[in-house]
Length: 330
Image (cartoon, rainbow, N blue to C red; front, side, top):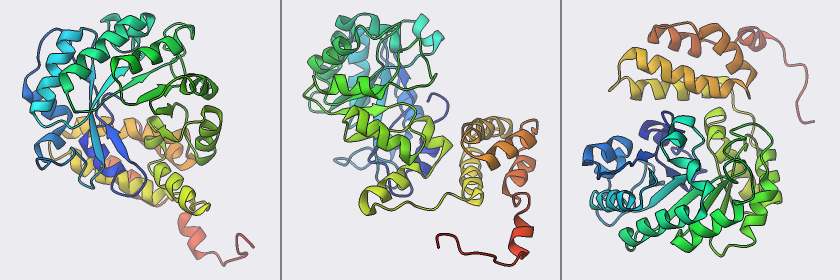
């Protein structure tokens, strides 16, 4: 989720109920200890949290600071730096499938050798002391033969929790997600395992839980495509009832709020690009978002783009004027 889930997005997505914790974009670790400004850029919540309290979004949802790298010593040094700055939980990224990251020996590239996964986790675990260390993996690099070995390696290295994305690196984000494989891993580990991948709806959530046997799931792209999905899941957990579908006006409002937060520090042209990136995530799952994206994708002026997002959907005015013909749910 690099370039997408920043502090502003975390604040908006966690403003309502649903999420228990969040993860930052990864801090890329190569061979040296990074300066504080890098950590504060990726996790500005570090500068705002009270001593003794978890690093959290404005609504109090915990934020795990994520590191990505392959050199155990460098990862350990940067874990220590993060903790000095106030980090109260650390996450290690062994799941990123990006070619550039993998070419530079980061992310999912380590899944070709479970021993390297264990060494990286162990180094950070030792450096972190009492601060919990979690990890995220995929089902392997080119295939699934080492899926369980890599998961066990993370556990043996000291990971307190493991998120498993239900595809290999080579599968990227192509459906389907193999949630049943997460179940195979979960049954062999003592630490909590969290299911991830292709959870776009309440039905997907239930199927992922059923096939994996996991109590918890992680939302990535699904949280952008449907910003109220976590709340929808939480409501169903508590009541067994479905919330009504999210209206376009609510989706447009969160995009507008996001733009307002981003334009306080970023040039308008960058905010336009970020807005389109989020709208693009929504369009595959929402017909109105798809229509708006097709209409607005070439607009470069931020205020014009926002106007196009916030005006009423086509036909909405006519619907309001039309007489009520039936009562849904009868």
